[in-house]
Length: 309
View 1 (cartoon, one colour):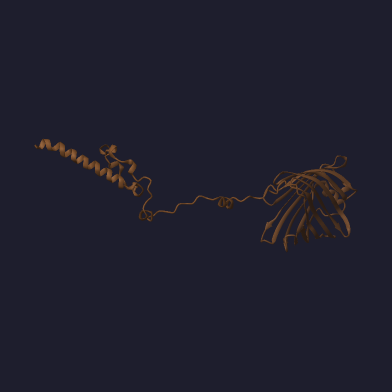
View 2 (cartoon, rainbow, N blue to C red):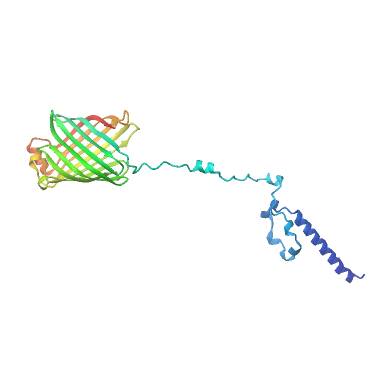
């Protein structure tokens, strides 16, 4: 046989051997253990690959890697969470206590103190409290002072309070003055809350007899020096719409009171304190006080207790 005749036969034999070798390699090829990240697909000549002769059913695409290959950098599979795991991760929370309709109460004797005035020993008090739920409450307030055994100032206020936000409450009610002068009744409307964390604010407007009006602004703040030692600055401003000489109040800005008290909480419900209080009268109120021989600008040392339950 001449060389020209041998060449086609040899070429056919070589192709048959190559096809048989490709089929055997495909059967033994473990694709699960192949490192496809290191294969250079760009250098492979896909046009010369005879895919028609490859036995794809025999290729080990679904085989698990061998124990030898599995031990090289493989991780155990993450188990599916069970119902018990879900219950532990997301427990049933109790219903929020807000708006449950429960009745609670609170009483605060913010100040029960002795004040060292220039011409008298003064016992002063400031108390407040409430009873009700989270949205609707009945509030009361009382403050006043006694000097040398005589009541100089005394008032009681009662309000219906309605929460309008987590930190603000609208109040409406009455105020009854017992001293100074003859008793007087006021209609009252106001708001109270905390515009800043810990800053307790009260703004109350009053409408009294014969068209008299008044506005009171109050604020106090607790500064924690330690867990038990607390410094409390406070301020109160009173304004009136008309002169009332019988009660010693003039129109406009009548008086201000500034205080600074340092208390030690033996327990949270009981705390003795010391401090200083400064009172000042203005305008016609100062004129009325001067006629009565009273001081218009006075600083007092104070000592007392604060308790709540």
